Image (cartoon, rainbow, N blue to C red; front, top):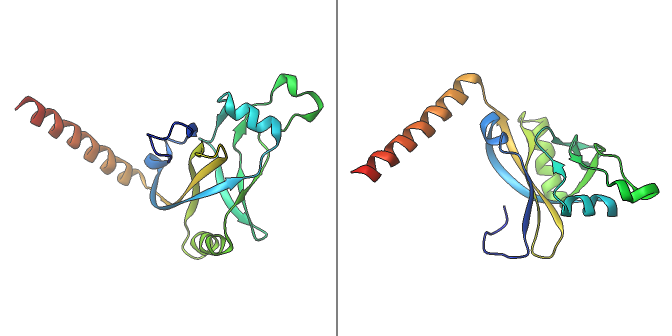
Length: 156
């Protein structure tokens, strides 16, 4: 995720549910190929990546089912809201992602979409393994215990 102190970087969309549903083991930063109207829509904050995922297909990395609202004044030059968008990563990272998904059974989940310090749109992709219901309960219990512990230390 972008540094908090950087005035140029701005969080566009975040997938808060990803850390609840998946055990994220590693993450990478990827560029994204966008149309002009999509960038304008992102600057207004009209996007969602909560239901999207990434996939390696045909030697390329794709972001599937991400939502970027269509601008009404874009006219003929508008874009499809839920189209597949190409992600830009190096060959080495692409090979690593393919290996993680095909051989190790991992899932590629977008964690956040943001503007970096140069004003370019970046997507943080997590290499994750799905959690079972018991794992989710365990994570929730740990989080509750941490809150309770902090509350007790604050009082005492």
